[in-house]
Length: 413
Image (cartoon, rainbow, N blue to C red; front, top):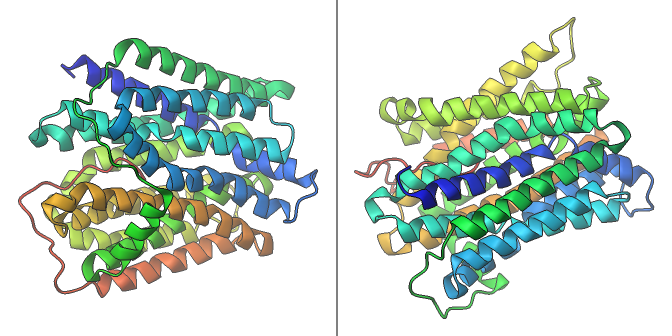
């Protein structure tokens, strides 16, 4: 990375995503524990879905607005303010002694998630058009590395801290974000040269999605993307609770499993995706990814026979990583290839909004199902992926699957 701003931006995003990953093995079970001692209008299992999904619903509603705001006042202020939101959110997380307090912490952190959109815009500002796809890949790399190291660190901190484990996790993550703020303050100058006067409203996102879903080819791809992300996030929203209650895993053990998920995802997206793209093609990647994720989800809750738990989970993780590694770039590529050049940014932004909305609904639905029967989230999630496979088979004949441009490198799973 010859440009120091790119290196600094990578470190900024990595530290932010590392902090996000740290809370993953702890959040669902903490939410259920706090909800069990609270007078809530819903059961503790559903409370888990509310807390886990709250982050994404805030991201869905406000990230586009913050992105638009960065066009008007600059990238640097948005990056700095979003990091401050994260500092406050993680301090609140470490101090959480009630369900409402924990929910507030995740909502505040949801506002902090705006820095990803601002970071993408920052890269676009300082990068020639022909190099943007490559440089956008640093966001995907930061996501991957944050997911590799974050969950194991979070599980270890929670275990090592004993009775103060939650504070260790929250304050450590807040300190990381404090380092992040200093890094951005001193090393990231403003990148925006000409500022926009356009103001974006929350309703603009809904209007854009309604318009997109009415389009033949793009609308079909958006539906497939929503189903896929919702099914995949059902696993993230419920698996920590399953692994603790059914298999008696500690937060450290749960963190290690999520770390393995991150490693497999990095291998697939960092090395194998190029092979899939050249030899299989994006249409087949879509068709192969659906059943891979379906099988990966359905075997997660299989009854343990002897010492087969880790073997079954490893097979599941490999299938999920392969499926996710094929689905995400295939959808991004197909949406891009079937969108006019002048609408690329808007369309891909709406695709990310669809993903955020799916991540909000997925965990909630998963925990409603989990309350009925612990295996239901994974069986239903697998069934949804088979529905996505059926829709993929029926994609419009006008779908454009070839293009001289390379497949975009995804930034998020």
